[in-house]
Image 1 (cartoon, one colour):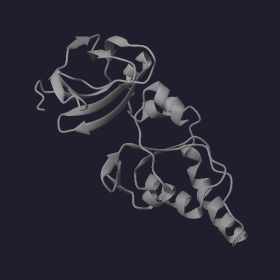
Image 2 (tube, rainbow, N blue to C red):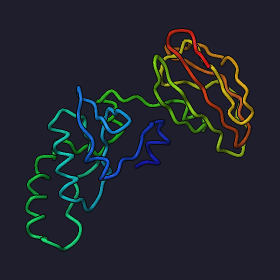
Image 3 (cartoon, helix red, strand yellow):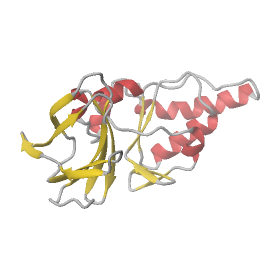
Length: 204
């Protein structure tokens, strides 16, 4: 599922069971120590602890957007098996409405947008900052890339930074078909940072 999302242009972070226990809901968003997220996506899994499934249900009931690719089947381990299974099944029954086998379609319904630039073969990581975004872009192929790529977020201005060489320069942007595009030149294995702003100015 993770590879399918990456290929489809979706940006995401992983979260552990322990981190999930520290997650809360604020105004419909998932808040973890250090970040905020719009959706919790749970891949299909055979086994899940009672603590984890209980927390997922709690977050959903608190207003968080939660998508389950499939319902988990059972608890792990054999200690207090009957007791844990009974509680597991009770909580599991409340999550049936969250199951969405077509994950991209479910994400679209929640308002999560994808990055079209993934279609070019350029790898990316996107982070939000102030009035814009920072992209880490990398050409992980064996071929040089040169051309326009479409960004998934509006950009009125952009700045390209090359951490290895320490250089920076104004990014070449254009607006086309209601979307922002940037011109990239990346040798095989080369990477750069792209800092964009929706307000027309970008500071280094």
